[in-house]
Image (cartoon, rainbow, N blue to C red; front, side):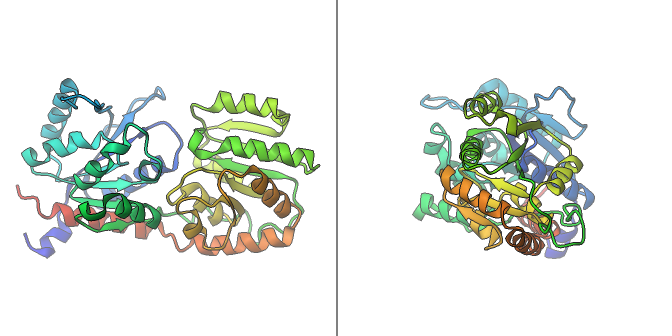
Length: 379
């Protein structure tokens, strides 16, 4: 196959994301946006999720399947699941499979690749490498080296892969930062953001899971209440920790200051950002956090925990605080709420920085990697 034919060839691409389809997470948004772009280029794309519990049916080109991997046993795979996947692969005959998240489920796709002649691209998102589950950590090296190509959403993830694999690393990791649609995530008005007097409205967005650190934000709100700083939090998202967070807020005496909004449409999330004074990201682990980029693109001043790829993403345009430090988080939020000039300056700089994360560039880089890997596939 010539280079020219490889650049114009329409591919059969299977994308598998080891996340819940119906959670309103950044990874879900990235994967859906990528698939839409690939389809727009004329490729045939099938999208699989680890689960789809929202009650709605999957679209024609979507499906949901878990791929359990036994640990500490001679036979690691679940045979009925393997047969089911093989049936799907024989029907779809992909040229390339893009697996999102370095989870043991990737081993199922590696298993059938030599038989069916497709190639595999593994995309690492953050906690899968930076904070892997205890049962997944011993398999991480095999999961990463089993792919034909590896991408990561941030440089710190790529560095961690290098540290983990050492001499086992057989290829470079391509860094493809998450992209943001700056035309959609625009400021509320052409005026400099943050110039109005603060009303103590902050917003946080993400899955309600331990890794996102919303318990730390609740602790920070309790400290602000003691200090006499009025704050109201809109917490957008849902997850397994919602009930625990609601109970924590009541115990901390800030239950009346927090609105647990749940999942919202993109338009509704943008409206929440436009109405707020500050965006807060208290995470314990992040790659290139899409929620932060979207907030930055709307011209909001942002406070974020200095974890993973956050510092490189913000590049001095957000107020960073140490991880796991509710005192520092409270101090930063209080300081910015009381300084409209500082908020305005940060918001203006954040918008400019977000423009560097072009969603078109991200899509094109993914497409180039997938095409380059698939060009070795012969029919």
